[in-house]
Amino acid sequence: MIVHFIDKFNPHSAQVHFACYDFDETFRRNPRFIDIKSIIQEKTHSWLEDVYQSHLKLSDQMAQRSFWWWATPMSRFDARPWGQEYIFKPLFFARALSEWIQTHPDQAQEIDVVGAHGLVATYLREFEPALQIQGEFSRTGPIPFFYLKSLLKSLAKLGSRAWFVLTRHLLVKRPIPYSRNVVISENVAGASAAEGHRYFFGGIFDGLEDFDISFASIMDYGCEPKPQRSSQGSGQPPRAFYWLDQICFTDWGRCIIISLKILWHSTQVARDAVPCYIGGKTSRAFHHHFLLHELGRLPFFIALCSYYAARRYFSKVPNAKVIFPYEEKGLERCVLRACAEFKVFSIGYLPHPQHHLLRSLKDSVSSCLAPKPSQYAACGHLYIEYLEKFAFKNPSQIHVWGSSKSEILDLGRDSFGQRMLSIGLLNSHPNELKVFRSWIENHPELTQDVRYSIRLYKGVYSKELLDVCQDLTSRFPNIIESHESWDDFISRIDIAVFCATSAGLIAVNKGCLAVHLFLDDFFDINPCFDKLEVMLSCKTSEDFTKRLEQLKRLSKEEYFALHEKQKGLVQSIFSPVRKDVIRKDLG
Image (cartoon, rainbow, N blue to C red; front, side):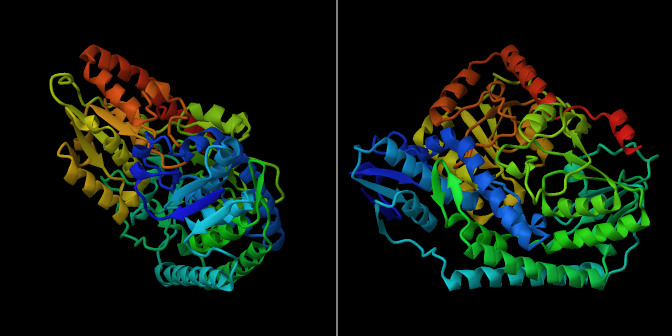
């Protein structure tokens, strides 16, 4: 069999079977289309577990070379779109294509692969050595230039972070308020230390002024500190500071040396070609590319600095208690390591719905197992079952604190059924908007008798995202981009459609009906703990077309009956804040 790798082609004139690297639903009607996404949906769980177990073996080797491996982003297995999906996708695409070839041996002598990453060809050669692979794609072999490029990129990012910490922390003197309870979180969008924690924790600590609590913000590169603001009349916590202000020049130098050692060991292990197993196939190239790509993507210097800052804090407050957002990031792992050394009690709060794509949440037996919290705090009751069955956490360690997102504020939908249906499209990743565009191209009637308002997620405000949004709004008069505030946006829509963002759940608490759409480009992900039936979930554009017709015929009473069912699910994900439990745990 011959596999041709090509950049573009006309699917309507295709003479051979074809597969597209970027999913486009308009191709689904073509009888020669190989639906890679459907194969992935069927095999995701078993193949992910295979690759995860292989990753644990890689971690074992890295841990033998560097004690600090667990502080790096490479040690965190995260296949979500905003995580490591970019490096997992070529591997899984190649394995799915191999699966199709094995199950359809007599259907095709030639296959066109459209717009694929060069690594797909690398992995496909490993999985199916008998294939003839033709076409032009980037070189991805273990050549010295690839090592040098990754290493130089990593060194450049290390230098920028080291300079950032030097100029924003070491050379700046700010007071450190020491408290028995310290809430630590990443800084978000340059917010002040007094504001940063609210992105993760909301207002769950409001009203606990009688407790000795400080709020620490960990700034990363690109986040500029704002002046501290007084809490007088502002509702902001009075005891807030920047966590890395505590480190000294000695700590700073140690972090540079440790970072350089990790970079060196990572390039050495990358050359060892540790095997990766997936669905009965083996790749010796995957971990090589995984390590080198991740090295240049996410530096870990800030995480190491957070460890030494934690040591200095705990040396002055030995009976401290630490609360932080639990997502298995290097920042929190470094703080947890210091907690273990000083016997400090730690609480990991899960602020957002989690998913099986973040395999690092699992407590598995491994010699390099990352430090774990003493206790877990969840924002809803559904987390207990999830953490116990998927992540293997001890249920006695899990307490439900609730979430400020549970607040119910019905903004009123008395006009439902009396006007054109207004739909808000909530976005969390550029790929979702591209898939939605293909849905509309596949079923243009989706834009009839409805108005769409696109609310872009500012966290990934990329040029690619803006271009797709502009294309949609220019081609379809009934689609606009919303620049309103959240409350104004949500008050004028009847239905919120979403894929991976928890904003779809919050919209339900604001009085909207929600519809989940499978707008994933590759791996499936949702914030509903896979309880999608109550969220009127739609897998395809045909499903969504039928769903819209049903919704247009709803009476106001039926609309509110559906909304009540959805509100019940959302309240189990974002449960009301339980101040009594928080007080007891902080006490």
